[in-house]
Image (cartoon, rainbow, N blue to C red):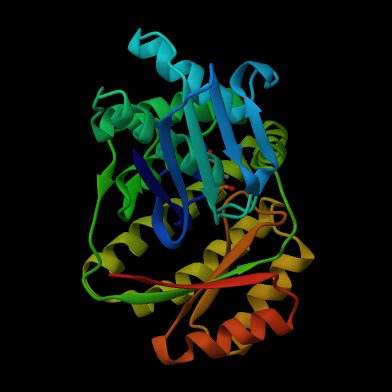
Length: 306
Ligand code: PMV
């Protein structure tokens, strides 16, 4: 049985979302994780994931291994004996780049296991399962990654609330630029936590400003005025800089995108490295992507939100 899950980017509200403020995220279908589960003629569960240099039997994986924990948790929760399986995992989502690679592996893997063992799971169950796995590996995740990836639709997300998916009133185009610098989300989230402990009032003020941007962003998207998102992205980027989660490389790509004709740009996700996003008019997408590569981006993705 096969299952897939897309990548994602956060449009507005990262970091603030960890503290109960809303955020907007979209799936990125140009990158994905594909999982195939087959019965095995050997004993045990064999995992083949060439992208992360993994070709091993489940029991030989270290405790807490992200892939191992998804499989073990699945069989434990379903209360079924562990069968003999061959599991192939392929991913085109860069790791630790803010594109949700970990959550996409969890979602695709649990869906493929559920299908293979004829234990169907609803989207809500898949989402809840993937969130538990995110918590094992990321400390205090808001849950936005697993949610947008499970539903594979734009989401308006508030921590611990049911996910709200929404539609764009008019399609718009986003260029994603990867700094190529791996940046664990846990670290930038930890920095923001320390900053907040030091000056809670200032940081909450920034979160409130980001919340306003997110709310206006959602309204602009739903009412078919996506061109308004450019300026909102620029403002959100400034607040993320104030939270200390940007970096010279991200700032450089953000500036480059604007110079090349983007309507606005910001870092996306945990920050410090990983990806930035830019809002572009569709005909300018290639030019902006080219300018990002010339300025040092390792990859670009052009994605349409419709
Ligand atoms: O996984 P990333 O790097 O896209 O970041 C997730 C967004 C944060 O708000 C920084 C963390 C979280 O758990 O929501």
